Every structure is written in C-alpha cells, then in structure tokens.
Length: 342
Image (cartoon, rainbow, N blue to C red):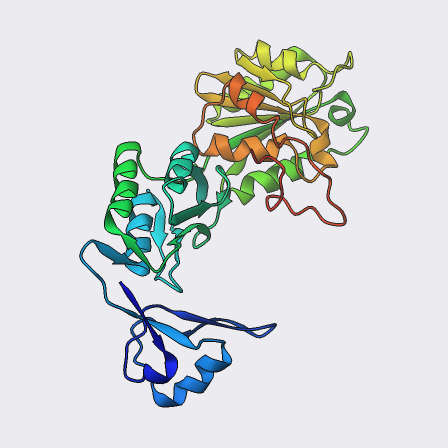
C-alpha cells in the first residue's frame, strides 16, 4: 500500500516513485527517483514543484509497484527483434533491436487494453522501423497494482504470442524492366529507374539487373524471364500500366508466365499498381505516378514483400482504409502520416 506523508515530515524516508518536474521550454523529467532518501535541503524543491505530500511505499502481499508491473507487461508483449528500455517515471519503452517491419497483434493489443489500470501503446502495424526506434510503451495507471491483473496480461501473451515483433527485411536482388517505346527508342530519358532504385536501396536491397523494353507484350515478357533467369527474386516493371492502347505491360507480365493476383489497388496515388507471382517471385507493375508523387502504393507494398509477405486480393482491398494520400505541402512527411495506415 501507499502511505501519504507531508514533505516536511518525510526527511529520511524513501520515495515510492519517480517525481516529474516540468520547466516549460527547458526540462521535463524525473527530479526525484524511486527509492531516493529525501533530504532536508530538498524540501523547498518539492514544494516549488507543487508537492506538499509524497508517497512512501509499503507493499502488501499480491501487490506490484509500477516499475515491476510495467517490466512484466513489457516482457510479455515483446517478441523477436524487440528489446526493453530501463524504467523511467513508471514507463518502459519497447525498442527495435533490428531494422525491419513492425508487426502488431491488434486484437491482442485491444484485449490487453480492456483489462483496466494498465496501458500498452504501439506504433501502427507494418511500420518500417530502424534499430533503436521505440515501437511501443507500457505503464500502469496507479502506482501499485494487484499482481493477478499483470498475470492476466502474461497469460494472454502466452496464449496468443507477443504483441509486437520485428520482421527483418530480406536483402533481395531486384530486376527492373523499364517499358515504353519513347524510352526504348531514345526519344525521352527515363526518370523512373532512379526513383525505384533509391527506394529499393533504402530498404536494404539492390537492383541487380535492368532491361528496357518497347510497348510490346512479348518483349516485356522476355525481359522479365531474362531477369528471373539471372537470379532476381523480385521484378519491378515501370510504365505502361494505364488503359491507353499502347500500354501493354500487364499483358507482358501475364505472358511471362506470372499469375496476376491484383491489378488495381484502392490507393491514391498508385491505383494502377499490379501485383503478380511467378512461383514465389513477386512481380510489381508500378504506375507512372511513381515519377512525380513522392509516396504511392509502391511504398506501401515494397516493405511487405521484403518482409516475406505473400499478398492476396484481400490484403489490397484492406488498403482502401487509409489509402488516400493528403499530398502534404510543402514537404511529404511519410511514413509519419495517415497514408497507408489502417
């Protein structure tokens, strides 16, 4: 239990929890730490913080202090690739130990947060994370909680698995097929290859082969087959994805032997994206908007492919919720924005 004591009478006693001091624009953090023995000269600082009373902790059987409780929640919730910070002001952060794609069991998260007196907050499912990035955080609401409540969290995670995990992104050799007669015949310079290459490399993979094909379905199919034979494990085609009579990239992908899973996604920009599978090799038909829009369906789908996901039509259907880009100006803030979040 917690015992309430006037600060003037608390000299020599141990504090039950971290005590936060806020100096607007300068500092926010613990001025006093849990377990600290209060000294006479520290009383004026506590009073200046608006603290006339402090809590002294006297735990009873079956009770947990906020730090022990938060640590047990965090340990239960953290899966592969996720580590824990030290407790600070009753809170523990869950951090990415590796770069990769964050996976969140949303139903389990919701169930835990309905238990009461505790919270677990995460980033959105399928956020691309860097090593060291905070992906979740937890704490209890009171300073002391009944141990069985924390045991409920542990039981739920034991039954359903951890709430958050990090999936490493594969390092794949990527094949790139640039389509369009105007590019093939040298009438204009291609602008898509550089953009695709930059996005691929930002996620740790590399463009291992490149072809340029005219608006001819058989030539496009041949280019795809050549890149597959050279060992490319993901093939991206650019251009020729609209409904114009010259746009035959989708037909070329089909003629290569690939099975088209989805042509058209409920995402703007990038609704004309095509996703196909040739065995276990994904093929993406990327629409021309990748040239002028900083963020498109390509940015939503590429990390999932590199994380080993095999996408279905239903996966694309779900992208409609959150699939409308706001075209933020003057600068795109993706992925720190609503685009692609559901």
